[in-house]
Length: 105
Length: 373
Image (cartoon, rainbow over all chains, first blue to last red; front, side, top):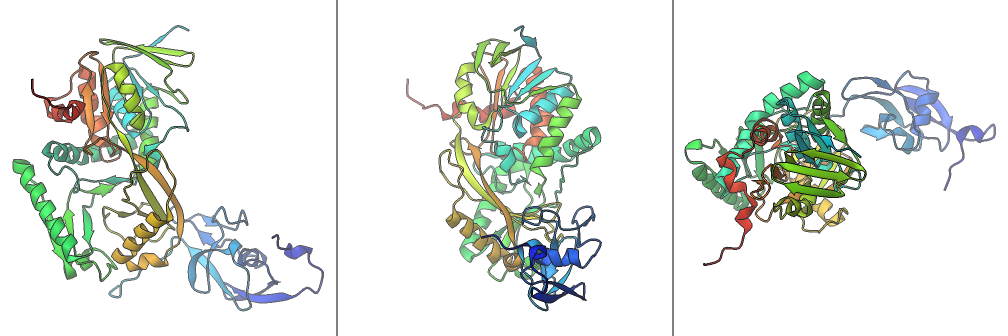
């Protein structure tokens, strides 16, 4: 039921490489995309829809929604609820997502 | 304990009680607002947030006028609350639409709106039935199943929670006394002389206003009134926030000021059960996606149900007690829509001690069984 904490793993444990804002980032296998955001050292992963305030992952357990990011092209994903896969593309979520784009626009 | 004296006591601190209380306090009356607490059904916390005119009052022109009057009062109420409390209610009144997913629905809606307009008489009712390409120009990403819509310029929406907070803040800033967790435990009624007890607390006033939602059914007879209201369950689905896309609300969909899309308008007779039912939620989501297919890509982040306060004919009930003048009752399922009239028109009537004759048709006596003498 409980996954092992990445930092509790022995040296030499398997890692995967993901892309955080296009930059290759090595993270422990089984870690979450939110952990990858923190390991990448970016100053914020999203801005809030109403005031534009910057956010970083906070609760790491699916409650606070502060870790929202675009993952493999899907907007507004809770990064702390997504396990990393090799080559995963994780990018910032700027404000509210776009729900629909008019062809004419 | 020595009773505290007030000019008016409101029993029920939801949107109806808070709007009337704010209106009375603004007129200089010294008011007490009693609130039951979190065990109450709290319809005001579950409200969808429409300021809605176009689906109300068929066969009841007085209700059509009252509702439209409230939509007219809303801008001044919202501005007053903003100025006094700094709390914005998110009011937008860009007009609203009701979408039709089949020719049958479109024909039925056309007939409904035509009849509503006839009943409005000289008061008038602006509306249009709009089809195809024009409807698609009004609303981005409208689904191919939508054959048309009805539109009126009167409709809008607002945040029920900010409205409730602003009314409470406005009320207490003006010196009104708010007492939460104060379920009524006793009362004594005499003409223009009322005493209420909530545990050890006792208060007296020449006016009492029953605004307890579903609780009014039990409270009203103590004050020589009737409020035969029943619960009607409504469920709501909420999506993640998205960039502002919908320029106006529909009767079952609205995008909040912050970007969430609310899906609502279910109606069930489920007694006092506030459970949520997957089959209803599924039907609501399916219809939403038929209206706007892009909604299918959005995540749902919250859902809830709440109980509307419904009279047998679905209309509000307003009364003053004949036996105990000074006792009033206000009951409705549109606490947001009617906040404008409750604060700006009904409160002055209660302060003056008489309901306007325009409200005569809203009396609960309309439910009395008629019999030949």
